[in-house]
Amino acid sequence: MNNPVYQNILDKKAKQHKAFAVLIDPDKLDVVNLQKTIDLAVQFKIDFIFVGGSLVVTDTLDQVVFQIKEACDIPVVLFPGSPDQITPKADALLYLSLISGRNPELLIGQHVISAPFVKQSGLEIIPVGYMLIDGGSPTTVSYISNTNPIPANKNDIAACTAMAGEMLGLKVIYMDAGSGAKNAIPTSMIQQVAKHIKAPIIVGGGITTPEKAIENCKAGADIIVVGNAIEKDPLLIQMIADAIHGLN
Ligand code: 1GP
Image 1 (spheres, helix red, strand yellow):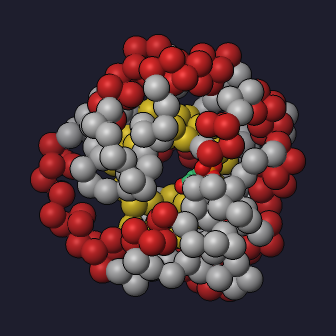
Image 2 (cartoon, rainbow, N blue to C red):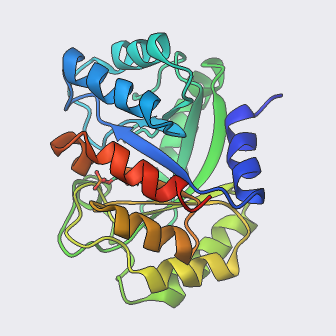
């Protein structure tokens, strides 16, 4: 199979199985805490491990992915904040186009520059329409990307953006309030987007409770991503995993 991770996402969606992705920021975890997170992810049958951050300042990406791959079979998916956050050791790459923004560099510019390098990596490439939604305060992503997020009460803009992304051929839509967002994405916005597209929907940013994860899944999210809250309390992995998988 050429696209095993994407196919895995599609298969889960077809069965209406909701998935949980733990986001690991290579800057934030040392070897011991990373191992603890991996062990919990295995124990509670996490579906995907996303690796990345909007500001990866250390050079540990390779090492982090290597450690995860050595320890488990959970698919490792790169969620890069910039084109240099790529390692062939991962299973797949979320190839992000920041479709909520109007910064040409993040819509296509950086992709052109890094294309040969990305292709050479041999990674499974998953084209993703990345939509930043206002989470109540400026996030690293909005600052670094120099783009405005979609206002949290503009469901129609979110739906039209997602529709356009899907029609352009993007395979997955990622709705993100940004890491550590004060407010997670409103349920009504997820519902509205889900009503208008068939592509799988990833939702993340500011999700800190199992209740919120369930609410988002019911609204139409296919994959829930949690990073920040788990860095603070790794035991949340069990609670959120049980909540999401309890819906399946
Ligand atoms: C951020 O969607 C991810 O890009 C996860 O956000 O760190 O707030 O869980 P949190």
